[in-house]
Image 1 (cartoon, rainbow, N blue to C red):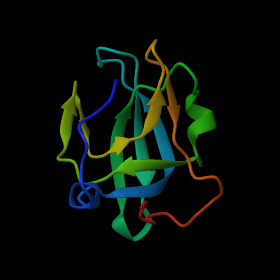
Image 2 (cartoon, rainbow, N blue to C red; image 1 turned 180 degrees about the vertical axis):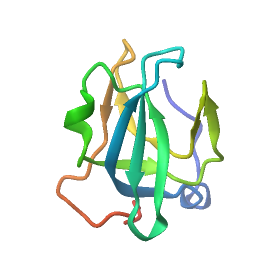
Image 3 (tube, helix red, strand yellow; image 1 turned 90 degrees about the vertical axis):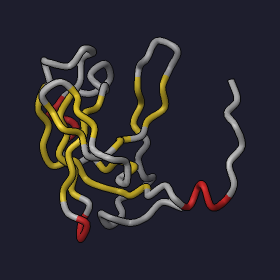
Length: 113
């Protein structure tokens, strides 16, 4: 399935940043199994995200992992949780999400371009 083409100005509006997961909790109220992540984006502060990544990841293995997230979406209510950013990952046909991560440790808050 292909998406509608975008131009550079459209892409430039998406603020993707590197952050480090500093806390993970379960989100049992979500319709699909999910974790509540707290992510440190350096000088940009911490943001929280709901992530449906329970198939491949255990909470204790996520602490300290760096991820890529879109940080300029408006907050979204997920059950009783307010998600402030969108953690990115590849999505398999069965819905399994594999996190997008930097190839090596980089400073939190670096912009993806």
